[in-house]
Image 1 (cartoon, helix red, strand yellow):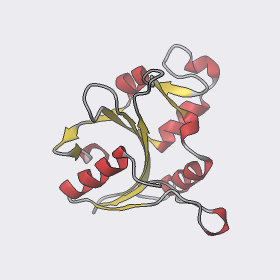
Image 2: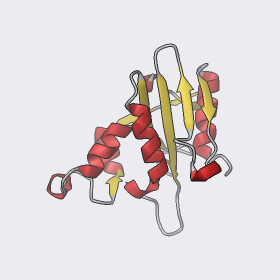
Image 3: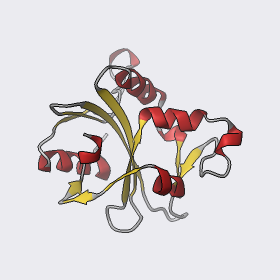
Image 4: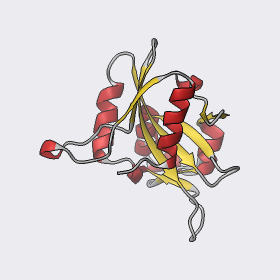
Length: 160
């Protein structure tokens, strides 16, 4: 599968900020296995796995939330195992591409927080911008780490 715009932005960001990275292709491999996430970043201080999710404008309307179902079981397993290792972190990057400017808004959602939000009891989700199926853009804006634009990519310093 070809890189989406967010994956290209991550590659540019790593190049500009001199961060070693490797993109994993989204494909089914031998014995049904698949890549654990989209990007691996390695610095002197940490190793980071990133699953990149892009939400674009649509004719039917702009997405106002990020569905939990956009993260596959294979990626969940990979990020869970990765984040359990000492010194390793896993993130779901969510890019609401249609907001504010042509690059939109980018949020870095730690994988452990993703699973925490998904597994919250329904009673705790109501009124905070989360339901059983998705996380709203307003919740991202009010509670999650936003990454700012830097040069042609994104400033990744907050996650390093």
